Image (cartoon, rainbow, N blue to C red; front, side, top):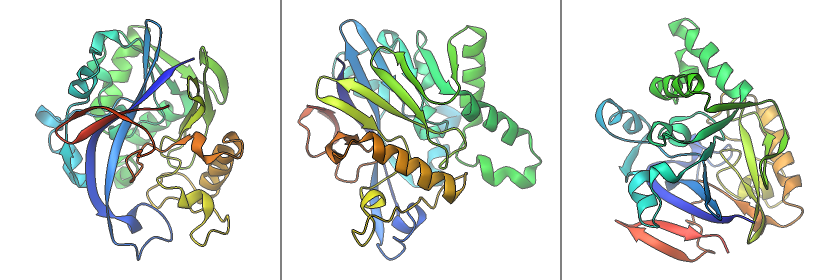
Length: 272
């Protein structure tokens, strides 16, 4: 069984209406950003990696109102984890805030949906008039994955797969991006479903009127159709218990879990 930690590392201030359909009148939100550390014995893995904000990458997050940030590496250090300790990174999707720090983990095998990676290379090759598609993609991250491929450190996943690592399962969930996946982990706190960016809030599952009508994201590359099917798949995996869900952009900052470390206001919480 894996011990899970949610690592908070950034925050944006933006309108709800730009994120979730039907929330256009909800005003602004402070949206937290996170990735997940999973530990089992000597094995340590990440689900997503956060992003770096140094050098030429310093201005990229500012385009998306991400004005508050701390290095994911510093946050991991708060619980005694060095970059070299990470053996695997499961990427939910290739947006900069989920894949932007992969270059900091030299020993990690990267697990990503084949459709996700290939679709971004294809989108990047399109004429400039299609550049809206790649506005949340940092080209440097795609180069880093390519470099890791030549080192035989990339595993391309084709659809749903159980036990990509022992007790770690993935489900293809397109919509937010074409090859998005969410992750299921058999943890010491039970079977947990890690959302990626399938959803940003429980209201997308329960419905704005608590009528069970799913609400899609407004910031998606794929179709609303795919989004709703993916939300339904995620809902099925919860097995009727929404406490099994970990939302990576949880505006309540995972208040149900104990804080085990904190640095400059950013938290590490343990899933118990």
